[in-house]
Image (cartoon, rainbow over all chains, first blue to last red; front, side, top):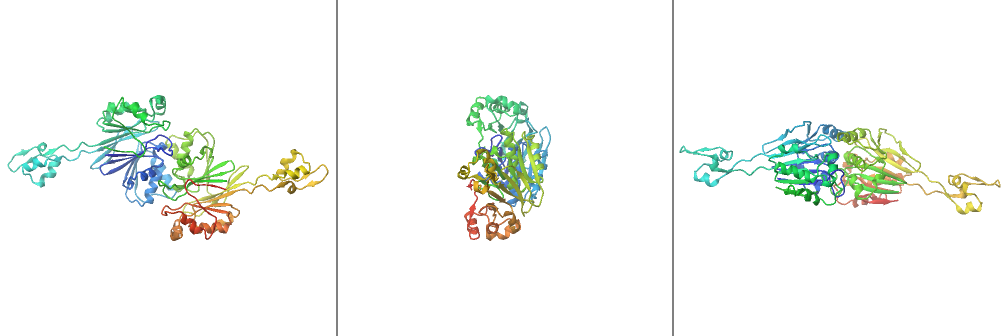
Length: 301
Length: 301
C-alpha cells in the first residue's frame, strides 16, 4: 500500500502549499481522494500515472477539496480517455460538475459516473475481488464523509515442503490456497493448516478529513492500520478547531490511540503555521507513531 | 499601462505551463482577464496585489479560461474582502459559480456582481472617469468575447510660459486644462491651443482569445495600440487551427498588420511546441513588432 500526498494544507492554495488531494495505491487501484484546485498539476509533477485513476472520492464540497475536479475531468477528455470514471461525493456534485462542463460544450466522451452520497451512516460504496471502500460520516460544517479502504484477505500461502511430503498433485494447489483440507488417496485427511501459512495481513487505510474531534468514530476505526486524520490546528488554537469543526494534532492523536491504529498520518494543516514539525511534537506524547503528510511526500506501507 | 501574463498556454495546466490569465494595469485599475485553474497561485507567485482586482473579464466558458474562478472568489472571502467584485462573462457563468459556492455553504460575504454577456455585437460594459471597456465578439467554438480596454483622453497640459506671459490667474487653470479658450480682461480672446499642449496619447489594449482568424475584427481594432491575439498553432498545424477555431501565429500577425496596431502580443500556445520562439519567427515577416507572452512575463507600455 502506497500513499501519495499531492496536497495537505487547509483553505487557499499558495505557491508552496497545495489543498487536499492524495492518491492511495491499493492492490491494482489508484484511488484519488479529494481534488483541490491544482490537483492535476500535482499529479503530473509527482509523476503519478493518473490515467490509471478510475475512482475519485470527494469528502465534502468545500472548495479546497473539489475545485480541481472540473479541470481534471476535462483533461482526461483531452487526453483521449475512454474508460469509465467514477466519482463518489455528496449530493450536488453531479449537478455542479455537469454544469461546469456543459457551459463549455465540453462534455466527456468517456463514461463519467456519479455516485452521490447522502447517508448519515457508513455504507459500502465500492467493491471488487480485492478491495472494498466504505464511507465514514464525519462531523464538519457541511455534509462530509471520510473513507475506509480495505484490502480483502488474500489466498493462503502454500507450504511447499508439506505439500511435497504428502505427494499432493499440483491440481489441488488452488483448493489448498483457498483454505480447503485435502483427502489423500490413502484416506488420510490433511487439515489445511498443515499445508498452508496465513496470508499477509491485509492493509487498510482510513481517511478522516475534515472533521471535528469525534470519539464516536472510534468503533468504526477499530482494526484500521493506517489512519489519516486532519490536524488543522495546534493546541493554542483549539478554540478555532471547535468553532470551525476541525481538529487539533492532539485530538487526532487521541483518536489514533483510542482506535489502536498502527500509524497516524497528520495533514490539512492551517497555513498560519511555519513549521509543521510542531504538529508531530504535540501529537507524539499521546500517540508515538505519527507521520507528517507533506505535499509530494510518499508513504509506503 | 502594464500587462502581467499569469498564464498563456492552451488547454490543460501543466507543471510549467499555465492556462490563460492576465492582469492589465490601466490607470488605477487591475483588470483580471480570464482565470484558468491555478490563477490565484500565479497571482501570489508574481506578487500581484490581487486584493485590488475589482473587475474580472471572462472571454468564454472553456475550462482553461475560467476553472480558476470559484477558487479565487473563495479566497477573496477567506481574506476578508468587503468591496464589490464584478464578473463579466457569458450567460451561465452566474449559475455555475453560484452553485459551486452554495454547495460548500461558502457564499461570499462581499458583494459579488455578475454581468452576463449575450450580445453578438460590441457593447460598452464598464466605464468610469478614466477608462472604459467594450466587448469584441470573437469566432470560436462557443460564445466568446474579446475585450477592448481604453484609457480616456486626459486633460490638456498647461503651457506655463504662455499662461504667465498673459498674466492669467490660477483660478482659470482648470478651465484651460479642460480645453476652454480664455477671454482676458482686455477683451482679447486667447485660443486654448496657445495655452496648452496635447495630453499624452491614451493607451488602449485589445484582448482577442480564443478566436479563429477573423478579418471582420479589423475595423474594431483600428486605433488599437497593443493587441493580444491568440496564436495556438504554427503554420504546419493551420488545418487544426481551422477545425478548432483557433489562429496561427501568421494569422494573428495579419490581423495586427491590417489593423495597424503598434504592438502584437502572442499567446495561447499549444503545449505541443517546445520552443515558443517559433511563433515570433512565423509572425515577424508579416508584422515586425511581435512580443511573446510567457507565464510570469510583464510588459510595460
